[in-house]
Image (cartoon, rainbow, N blue to C red):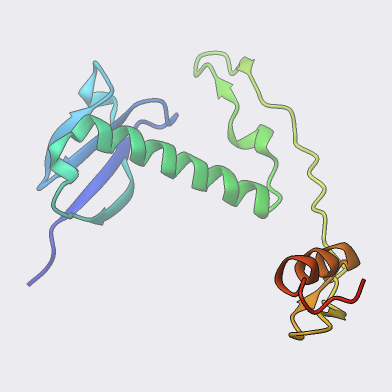
Length: 145
């Protein structure tokens, strides 16, 4: 028995979206449903998706586009090439995103290991002040003044 699937469909420019369930469009963001031409994602149907199809569509589109954008950044493909908005008639660029220059910071230092121990119960601390506060609070009767 195969599980039912829902599909996310879009137009070629990823500006209009629709959800199809059982080969039927259940919700779309387009006033022209014929503009939705390609399936871009699919997932198994789970109970609850159909409570509010518009909400499901909005969340799925955000999730899909965010993942697509993250993949572009990770694979170092120029964002400008992928997300240009072009007019089909004259190929003029109306809006484009500048290329991103991301510097990924790598932590080479490991966090400091606790090197200080409480003199009474051997709990470990990184800072002398933390150890002192602990000893004053929990072991005040044992501290010599």
